[in-house]
Length: 502
Image 1 (cartoon, rainbow, N blue to C red):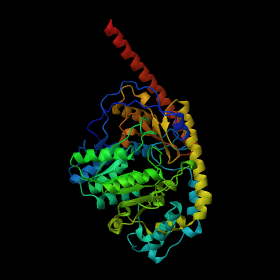
Image 2 (image 1 turned 180 degrees about the vertical axis):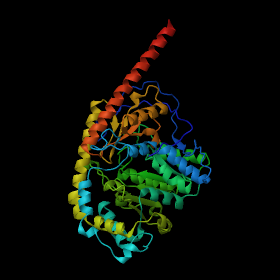
Image 3 (image 1 turned 135 degrees about the horizontal axis):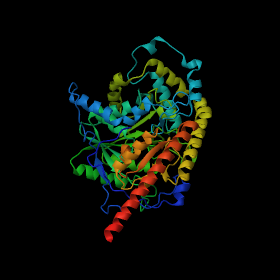
Image 4 (image 1 turned 45 degrees about the vertical axis):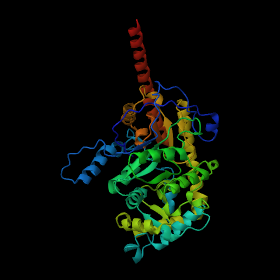
């Protein structure tokens, strides 16, 4: 995750509306109410924005091409926290004072289950075809198992077809490939904010494609029944605004379950969003990478592939990977399902740069076909562990009086730390992020998700109990000191005002 550079780094704090107790019962965190530390700007908030990934670009790497300098600049400016973590990673025995990573969305709870399954005899197989160049879409035996797997776990009304499947090394590569084959350089894809910020990098570095933001806020008022709620009306207004600036919108990206909110879209919402896209002839990229990480059964998650009829199947493209649902982010296995054979073939052509070894393809086929182990062993235990970790962190946040948004999907909680920012600016948010890192706990700040309200942070809970406890302890220490700083600054400000009035 990286911080998208922006020219304007100060956005007024928006007071939250009062989230009812009903929100709590339906899965949201402590009610999002309370007073801002300063009065909000009375101007109407901006409903959309067009990203400029290189707004603050600078480079002295003259040995590189212009593209190479931008690519290096992204690495230098965007990965500081992640690089710092890897240089000082916490280890209970070897480095107990190292950094606890509650910022990177990985499932670290089920290594025991996965290591057992991946070392069974059926995984250890070599034959000539696995050591030779495959069909760039992926070996036929793997695409057949992917189609069968998605048909079963997405609950598709009809069996999905192997010819609509393309496999490659992760969703980052898939975002890059899809953006490149769907969009002309300079065109944009709509995306609701807050969103997983690395998508900006995925689509820009190869294809020179930008994102257009559909800004959502935390207020629960009027038609908004939950914080950061996406509606067709907001999509329409954002599309109209972007078009008015002479920028061509080519598609819409939806993440379901949503990252960083842990929210899910209902079947009715999905149909509405897909209908909006069809009316405007927009492609829809559905990122369902957390579809099997919904640990609250009452949510009733539905994949877009479960819908009886897609409004525009030729422009609907679904991605999934084992990185999240199976805790294999280092394995790099991603899947595209699309009925558009032109798109599938174009993406497959890029798979010569993003393909998988034959041995990994064999292992993934063996894993995905083992529905008994997945359904009876892995998923129940994974969901139980996720729920327990989520409960622990949620209770810690409630004890600290910190509001949050979380509905029981994914690995993270969207935490409201705005009361710890006296002026409510992104500069303060960045300083608070730095204090967390200096105190050896890595979080992800709201700016990296293009959130328009400074002070939101994503806290990842899918880790072992000892690391969670230590991470929360370090967070508590930082917030205690930050709270005192805000109180002292407010007191000084009040005294200054009083002395001026005398």
